[in-house]
Image (tube, rainbow over all chains, first blue to last red; front, side, top):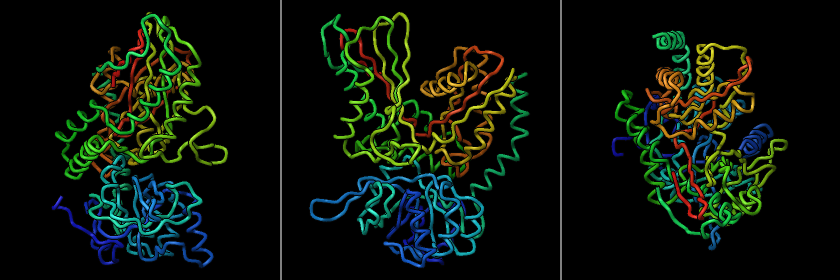
Length: 206
Length: 300
């Protein structure tokens, strides 16, 4: 694990711009997470009405990670487990949030689309790809729960701020320079498809 | 294989309580462990991967699977919804309401499981989420001739890989048409279904039967050879084709987009539905039998 570069969160604009698609890094510091579409709608409403969301995400991160949060007996908060969710569900909303709040890091799994990639390049923001099925690893990196907002929502939809140490490794899926592994790989697979189908024909007749 | 729990004397009917207990256990177990065949396939993939980042991602996957076992925690935070397939031996005898047994087993599990489950059961008309809902758990019932056991298999399904399943109905398709359709489904899922995946393909029957066949095909252990030679060959070439796309582990590039392609079919009419579904890399899957003498045999 020592080989991975460690990045302090919230990520500085400079750190975000220093990363390249394909880099694998570990995260230390504070992150803000949610897995909820209703949550994104509420954050969008805040942006449109000029209000601050209950947890400040300006120049910070908004990661598509779902978590089980609950109150503890001593009046504190704890998160029992955490894991990424599919980010493309939020494609239509993310460009507005990235620009309005000047986010430096977004993430989850599966990537975001070209509209998001463009907003990220304008602002200086990266997309971090977390391991799906990585709950034992991700949860073990949580060192504290700083805040939980919108408790009327189901647990994984709430907006949660966590402190983490050594979260990852995560892969930079989209960098702040307009490079997206997801778009590149999809285009590459599309380019390869005629040959893949031709090979299937050869295999079938061979 | 492990045997445990003599729960009744020979020749007694299989009880509602036994089905309730076992179905809940199978769901619970499935959340905390990546099946052995799947871990072996991930290890083989790690050994043959040529993409450095993909090698690392596969290594991290194996680390996550190991940590889940060591700490008895969920591999994924999304426990999905409980999906069962129950095979009733044609000669099995049982007492009570087996459908209610599975519903009650899930309700009791929700109340006691640690760590608690997130609310994933969704009303599709309102998108409200909770722990209960119409027809939940989702159960497929089958009958098998010549046996006296009841087999229960559990495979929780979640949005991550579940949303990419699709079906299309063709008329008199060639094998090339069918395989091109599978590749179209693979392209649509792209990087998003937590690859490397296990792909199930169902060909023929009727619309519902094709989907059922595809889903059942994903229960087959990785590395087993399809007894139908035409399909065994199709599985091999489709696996090569899927892995030639380059999406790789977690869709960030590599040679390993699928661990297996499993295909089955049913006779039908000239209209031929083809269904394609995906299981993410953790491939949650458990299975056990309740024998006529009440013993429970855990298969996986």
